[in-house]
Length: 581
Ligand code: ATP
Ligand code: MG
View 1 (cartoon, rainbow, N blue to C red):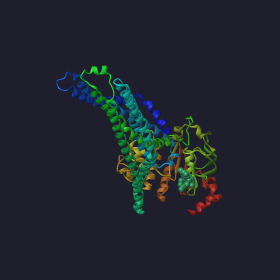
View 2: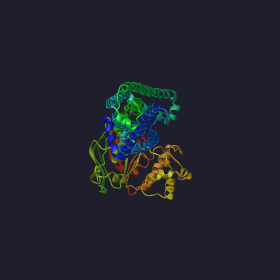
View 3: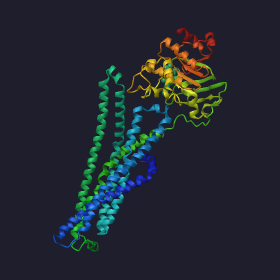
View 4: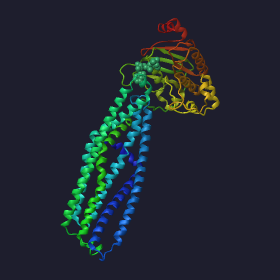
């Protein structure tokens, strides 16, 4: 239950609509119960009075009509107000969850599958709509309406009113408790199996090409079917229990009606009140009034059993959302420095030591490196040696476990996030293509508007003239034109050329390109950054002599550094790499 507290706090933000919803729900229920009670009494009273008797039927019949119309109108507005309030709450919650998710990227989010995150943001947030609509509002309304019925009936006979009121109140406390406990058992399993099924299903669709090529469709389909069967099994259990709750309440209803009839038959009613309705009205009409109100009161209780059965799922969804919301980002951008100072030594890594969270082995060990303003630095090394990790630390996707990174003689942590982002243009190893137009895929590289002419010029420079022929409005990414690995890389390069950050971090920008194209692209990169600082991770040694400084990382250690001339004369790692070319 404690998992629900943060979500209950959210209720404060939409207090009035939530309150109004409860008032309308109470009024609707009261009108409905009043209608059944009054019409029951009215029919009985007129039957007893008989034809030709003096009996004021005008007020009761007008009230019946008024209550019938009122009930419909109140129900209509109640549904609008309560649903509107719930959707507003869910919208706030979704924004809140989303704004918590973003700073977790990429370090903490790597732990979750994308489909699982989406499921938490969509399905789990949706499940929380029951909290107000099916649980809190009906429960409060039930308490108020039962008190109201008891008070109303006590005007006629106190002891019978108290008996009916107490039985209803006991049922109101016992039924939700029983079904809450029953629901808690498999609510968590139901939510988890739903999430698992969705993730497996998304993966099954996304990986169709590989699945078909490796002939693994049957195996994965069977796995999917097993998960689905399990999920349906939990749903079936829930439906059975919901049916049981209805049966139990109907039985309780019958018992209460019989009990009321029996008790009412032996009682005296307050004749003063009876006199208001006409002297012909006898005790039989009051018996009908009590019985009808006992019958009608179950309208409040009926939905509560299955609603409280659902609470296990609500709690489990709340826990799944809290699990994300309560995560703290691994990297906190608390720096306030907004002006980046460009000293001679622009970037300096001092005794940097880093291992990825949840991994024991070290990704970078005792690393010391200085990068001067305007320098062109190549980072070489075998696969898995830690080259990309070094770039990740420079953009603060992760912070070192020990050691320090200085930017312009100040700790990199002293700068605000936006200042740092403006200083670095980071071309990652895997270029992400947005499901959007070619224009938008390029535009997001810059904060200022890029003209069409500039975009076309850059596309031409990176060798994507054929892509540009289909126009800047063509759709890329999912559902759009597919791009080859080399084309994606070039699009990444086009973004780099459109970005004006003074420091470029490029992770294998020429991977997968043939040697001639590679030379062309390198020429382009050097021309673009002649007055910028460049750090380029590469496996290839094409044009390596053009770099001012070369650093070689092997197995998490920076093993060699120096200029091309220095390393050519006196090195082991570099000469080994050169021999392989
Ligand atoms: P490549 O040339 O193949 O790109 P690299 O030198 O760039 O290799 P890194 O990506 O820096 O290598 O990886 C260094 C080590 O850290 C590897 O053992 C890798 O498995 C591990 N690693 C990389 N990224 C993560 C991550 N997000 N979480 C955990 N471990 C990681
Ligand atoms: Mg890498």
